[in-house]
Image (cartoon, rainbow, N blue to C red):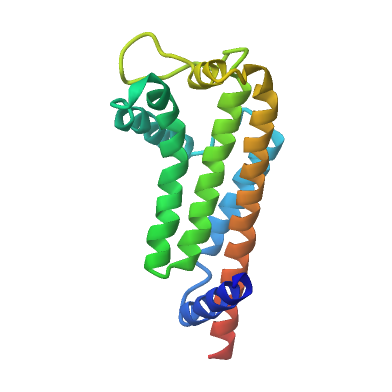
Length: 189
């Protein structure tokens, strides 16, 4: 079943790649490679997408504000992860496979940001931002404290970071493969 899905997806990507211009997409993929290197080498790195990610995070708090304090607090992270996944779904409906690979890169930047936030949950050294007035709460300190998992914050941060690395690898490898397909289609024609 999985092999059939992968073969079908491969055929769709190959068909979609016909006539597409790989040269305009390559710099974007190289930029994601650059930011992945920056995230790997500097845990405090913020890419140009970080303000967008923060805005989506804060919107998540607003969207979940009607469901109690715990979900209100968790809602920022939920939205931060959900929105890029929604982009994957939306671009799959449009059969824009390169945009899907970039959406995975975007998701990875969010996961790196969440990993940093989780890692800070005990020290609480990050400067908190909120559009909702004063008294910002450190989301992950609150979440992990309420669930009794605060002592595992380093492990959970590591898990988020490993997910970010895997998702970025998926983004870069699939994006490179799609560009290779586009290049191959151009050479054949």
